[in-house]
Length: 189
Image 1 (cartoon, rainbow, N blue to C red):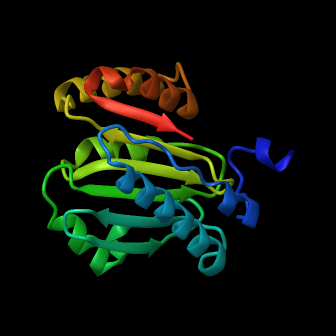
Image 2 (spheres, one colour):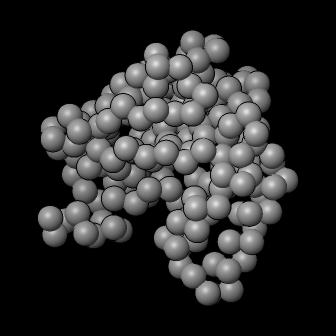
């Protein structure tokens, strides 16, 4: 239990965490798509455990192109540009076509760079974080997504962070609490 309370320390992936990864009902996704996302979470955690020392792994998925690619990162980040295949899927995608799924070696859910990526790139429909303990957090653009409104919500929260009023984790929590006003759905499992 003590290891779980350390939000900023790497947690090694266990078989228990792999078996714990839940099926999360993502708004506007079919049951088959939700099952695919859950399977992809388990796969990327297994790859992180077996091939990447429990560090970050990114899975870039396109249901439309029926393609996926994985990218190995380090303890604190992963860059899809390191994989020509992943970058090719991303660069050729239409708006709201791409799913970006990745793990966080700590028990943190989203980071501010995660949210910025989801906002900045029109081709990203959904981003998920599966922690190394098997908890899943999903942020998805819905049909009511409005870029300008979502950006205003983010900027308002981010200004408080830049001003030193609130910390990184509180900024993320506040955005997740408000993001539905901009057309995002936040779900966890």
